[in-house]
Image 1 (cartoon, one colour):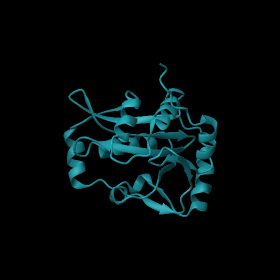
Image 2 (cartoon, one colour):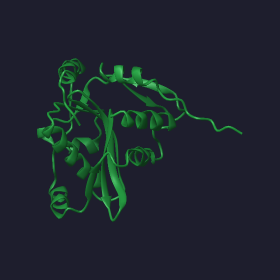
Image 3 (cartoon, one colour):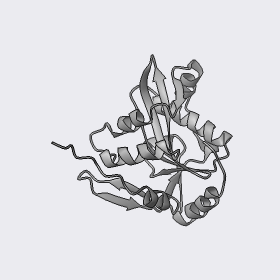
Length: 195
């Protein structure tokens, strides 16, 4: 008996969509929709808000931060929730993007266990944050701080978070009109940034 293998989203279409400010998400039935929110949520790197408790966690060095060592584990961790748009098609597609150097993960490890992480897609000087998860206090936030430092050091100028949530607002995420986002995206795509 053959096992059904989920189809990949067409990688060319997905990357072309990102380059135009459009991204896919699945609904609970697995149907895929394409989004271009207006306004668009972004994180200006200099606006990253680090609370006193997060600063203390960072000082203690509670977590070991790694990048791109457990991408598939990270996306699976992000999908582990009651309602998720990250189905098998997304897991397979973004794992493929990771293998070809377009998608990246930032991971928090403690005692040899993955306890938090985030992933997204990098194109030119733009990083499109997709999702994050945490199994330990501040683990995903520590990953975000490490990501922002990494992106700043490498000259990335646009950090897209797609939508605003109350959690993201506490970290400094703001919104800009879509037309402004699209202009900034086109400029960012011209930059030769390397992960």
